[in-house]
Length: 307
Image 1: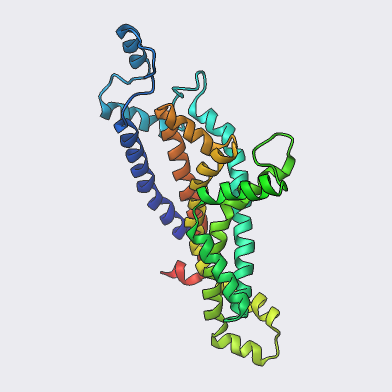
Image 2: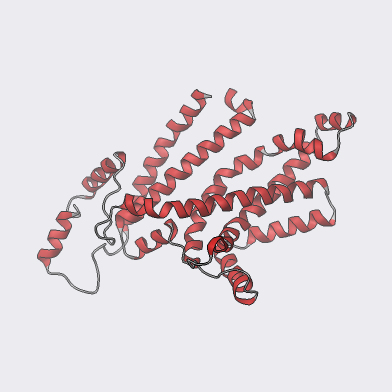
């Protein structure tokens, strides 16, 4: 297991390096600069600002300087949030985004696995068709459509939940953003669970368990659930990435002061270091979470470690 984990970690290093290179080149290829605004600055002041932030150096020297800072954990200063480093801004915003993403992921797994298992146990019935129809609807509708519809229905018309991120709403303010993030993933996980559970339930060892007199609940809990979860665990990596990237839209819609909103503001303000720092942080987080998923997969299926 240790060798398997080390190989996965070493394989992630080139991926992160490629992300840093692409983020740096794409941000610097965008028109305009971090200090361009309606007020025209004198050439002397522009030159001093460029020198202070090393923007007057050649592009490759800027990249090597930035890469050296990233290796040491320094993501640089923010150009638009004065007297703040990018690391400080990310550190202040990430707890809320992680809380939101964790709740959405838990909701997705619990509801998706339950719905998919129920549909598999009642294959070709009305329940099965209803679950798959809802799942296909959830897959087809993007997050930026789901979120406003939820606000319109549950907050404006029915007035059950707060529409925005108000400080006096308590835990209820998490419900709409979490549901908006979780709905597409619930749909994917439900479909994966149903297909995998149907295959497992048709296996010989399940027939043996039934012949021994075990009930359906016992068979699913002790024999079918673990092998049926392998495709779901494989999908956890892309699901986590989808939730993290979807939170950028959701946080902006609901006015949540998290990492997604910080990314949007940084992009609008041409804050090079802030945008690159958030991209690198997201990429690192996704790589680490995918590593955890790979390890879980290897724990459940020892054949992965042997290969």
